[in-house]
Amino acid sequence: MSIASFMFFPILFLYLAVPTALLSILQYFLSRLESPWPGRVLPILSVVSSLCWTLVVLFNIVGPASPVLFLIPLAMLVVFNIPTLIFLLVYKNTRKKFTERRAMDRKDLQDL
Image (cartoon, rainbow, N blue to C red; front, side, top):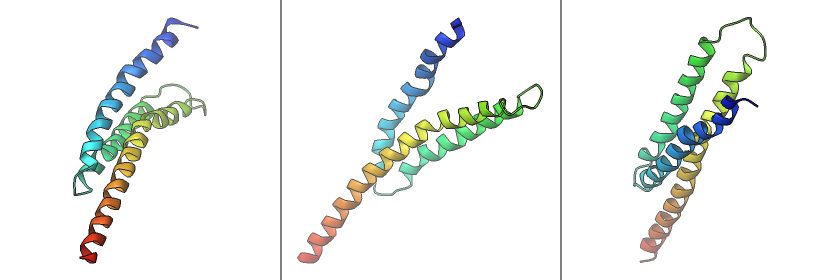
């Protein structure tokens, strides 16, 4: 294996895992707000960002057209949407607890 393949995982960790973890904390607090829209901002931005980076790579592929070359942007799309999946899981779990608590509050008010 070459040096470049050994450097891939630390770079991927620094540029994908660390920001995703930090932004997941922000996603948790945004999802706890009363309005559901602030919690939807990070997943939407993450999808748009992954699509932009995938299109940049797709348009800059140089060489003869082969099916293998088109797997690279597809792999990028999958890897760059992992943060989107994490943000959506945080959003769904946080909003589920929020809506359950709100339903219980409404039920308590109706019982009065």
